[in-house]
Length: 392
Image (cartoon, rainbow, N blue to C red; front, side):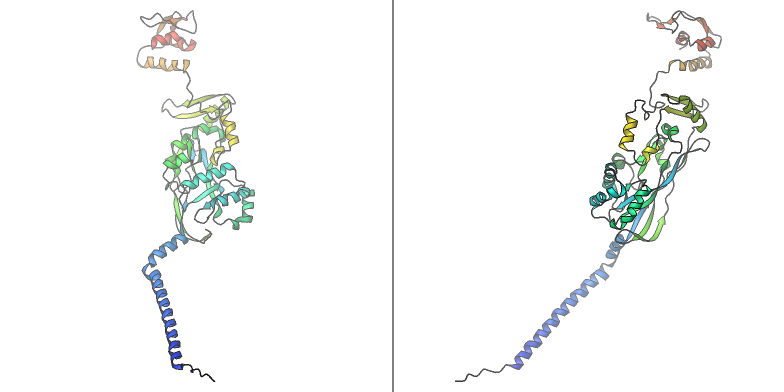
């Protein structure tokens, strides 16, 4: 027996089909509406916020370190100069794996462990946007090797920076001192805005004593950079202000003569203008080359200076404590004349000793038998201790 199946309900199928179309259109419309709302939220409501954030990623403010002030002697002879060196620097905003980058740079830039340690120390305190020095005073070989692989190191580049140079080397080392890299202790105390982009600070001598005068004020440059930190264009610039120049009372010619008198012997010479108290010469021998300290002295060189039995780092003219001996006798004699206590002819009888009233202890003259009758002139000539005991 044949079975009969009902024919498809075409009207019902049309309604279902239309319903599906309307539902799909509704979903698409909702999606487009949400997209438009999100676009309006980003482009209209928060336009200023996102524009600022975008500019921060694209536009950067780079510090421009100031040149240090020059140091001269009293006659204008240049004692401390500045000269340009090539420095490898890194931008933390463009480098995600800093440790890995430094490790790969070791063979390229011939980095020592000291270079790596100094860099890590600077990273801890530097601003996020500040470029950090990896190695100063690059050689031509360092620059050539880096140029071959520079595209493998986004965020790392070679810059020209000014550094200190002492043209007379050892001659003024104990007067001028030297600058050196800023250490951890100094980083905690300095004004980071004032030292933005700067790696050097006065360590000893005039360089340290007059640091505020010599340092100068940094400037800033606004630049547009790509994703790798490469500068696309310069937008604005505030130039740095060079430090003030410093003129010392030291006389180059007299300093040279004093150093020649000591030659290779240990000792110190200080020449003072008695009319003004100005220091005209100050030499401590042996001395050292302050240029070794500027870009970072090696452990080997520092050990050689530190362990030297002649102590070249020791400033005998300033730090040394020595009995004045008979060098004070002329001053006592002049003091006696000034106050009317004696004149050049005032004489005493020197028995070869002196003792205080009521005290039996005898302070002996270097000539045990004494000098007999002695006036001020003879006392100065023979260096009579007893005369100056009595005068005092």
